[in-house]
Length: 456
View 1 (cartoon, rainbow, N blue to C red):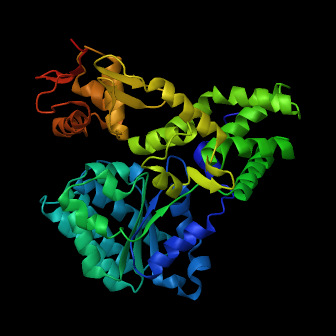
View 2 (spheres, rainbow, N blue to C red):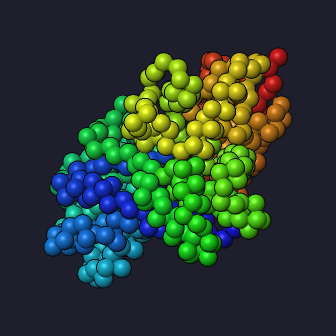
């Protein structure tokens, strides 16, 4: 049943007209905006769709805009040079697709070459600035850069890059606009003063991408069933939407589980059979994975608020942001979690929130990290991958090559230097160590690598 990847499912028949209209209105006003959505909620789908619906959204004014989708998963290296390279690469592709003037494309190609093969490091940002100026000078359209998968890039790249992007926006307003897609508001991902002015560009236009409505969730399941030639009944689809809510990938995982059960003749149209199926869904690997991703995207405060709500305890801080994100909504019977499956997953997290022994431990199902019995701050994807590697090799040294292979991938062995590893280790220590300057768990073994040690 695993023939269709989750992101492909998420692109099918998602009615995001309101979300698209919000972004289009921001662009029309030359205002930067930030799309915030939890894991697999459809952020990438939204950004990718914007160039395709440009005429529909802007009508006769559509030709005023040059929308360029930039997928930062495709960045070659997480550096200043890397971010400029991937932006210009995608700008060139957009100009080629739209058959822009040859002299404009030639000028951008020259700037691109200056970025990837500079005669001096100082030439890199200047070449990028020159390319944007050329694009804006030689054609009349507003340049709109759609930054997808922006979380890690924003968390890691040198602050001066974002100072420069802010300066470019100020210089070329209203001809330049940024749209970002992240799992958290930019101001929560990074707090340094140097990036504060960049974050200010988005402060008035932070748009949370909520789960799909019940109607759109049904449409999505119907489309998948038709495409996959799975004979789901109306009752089956009602059951799926009730369990999964409007989260696209959770809908996919639940639909597959139900379809598999039907193939095995387990599922029958009766309440008792659906009840039995509901119990099976809680242990489905793909469903648990989607729930864990959602859970990990919540802040510690939001997780506590969700558990308090499900336990019918007094309301605590964090509930308002859960409602902004669509995880909790108001109903006639009170506040409810958008998905029965995710609500069940959240309830089970109470069982692992007991004070544990000293040292670092990881709840792999939820992705939570505990230090001396206390919940650690949320980790980024790279930080979590590094910790998993060290945790799996407790009290053993992990050298540079093992770290790069596990965290970034074997293709980056020659690309990631010692300084980048040290920077990642330093960020992880700030979240795990009581005193990062004198680490007691994540230790450096000079000349050999790093290791995570058991408590004494």
